[in-house]
Amino acid sequence: MSFLVPNLTDIIDILMVAFILYNLIILFRRTGGFQILLGLGVVLLMYFVASLMKLEMMTTFLRILKDYWVIVFVVIFHPEIRSIFRKAMTSKDVFSFFRGKTKKVNTPLLNAISILSFRKIGALIVLENNRKLDHYVETGEIIDARISTKLILTIFNNKTILHDGAAIIRGERIWAVKVVLPLSENLEYTQKFGTRHLAAIGISEETDAFVIVVSEETGRISVAKNGEIFTALSLDELSQRIKDAT
Image (tube, rainbow, N blue to C red; front, side, top):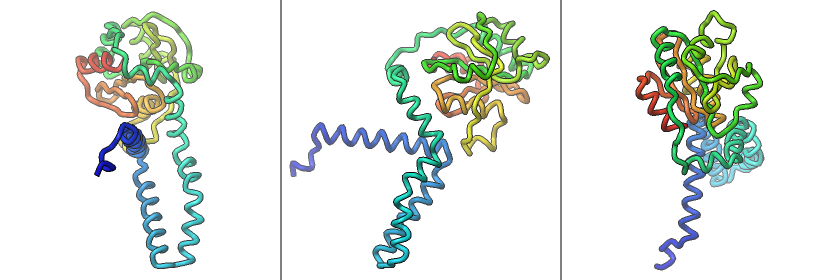
């Protein structure tokens, strides 16, 4: 019965497969792809039944279809696959998991968020992490200014030309404003949130950025990270999440 006892190679093999399966499940959950996965499962079941019953025409048809499954999968999930590889190719993303969080919470930023929330002024603020956001910065205006409460309030004042879009914070400075962000296409969120929140989720799906959203309708504070959004946060909860995520 010694063959039932796993060795080190077996353990590594199991862990690698488990890791891949886990990330695939997360991918399908974020993209609403379970319906597609279910469809592929039905086709597989039909192929098995057709083979068992020796239905030659159906078996041949499904076998031809099977040859193109990989192409169909790549076409459907091209944006998500590209995002995964983009993150994987950045070594900083891998090692940041093991690194302690050393950045300090910026008091002027929290003060500004508190005021924006109280006044119900919409805001979208992206805190750049290890991944540089230069590609997105190009869509906005670079200001490279020191963070201050007054400056943030001025940027998101709806009477200024800079309020529309996102502000990107790099380190201790407001690097760019009026930035256009990609909108999330996750079916779980598209029916529940408006453009500002979908933009926050969208940039967090493609990068390791931490995004803060203030709702113009309710004044509620939300944050997005790794393709997930957390709503109705208190200022203390926001402060803690910034510490944990940056």
